[in-house]
Image (tube, rainbow, N blue to C red; front, side, top):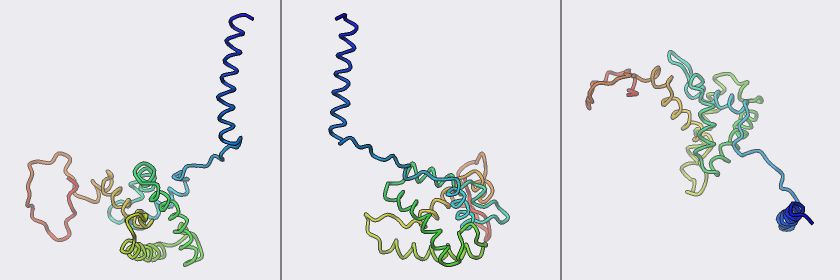
Length: 189
């Protein structure tokens, strides 16, 4: 036997031992591959944009949709939330659609602005009650997370900071006490 053939035979034997032991340990069955818990579809992003737009609508300033709030929520939920809150948030998308269908007989995207506001107001009340009575190990209510992310994402976005808030790109010295007139926008800087 030449050296090359001996080395390849030993490699096959060792490789077979490694693969064989793995198959023996797992029982020769493969686990089904499932999509990640936080795989958001374009429809999910559009739904989150619409929820955000209902919370912060376009008026004389751009609304949450202009800040691409759905994409922001996706990133925050995927990268920053614990698994229990990720699961609650994703299941909340289905729960939101179910509540819309139950109350109005159609999905959230097909509701008019007044119906969307009515539904989200009811969900906000439900979320406040849930948060009052929840235990520390329980996940947050899905609508509370959606609302919090909408506010955080909007007011930290370029659109929110420069159009909805007062913004000075290069602020001067710090002044701790500035007169406030009723109706003035808050400061972003």
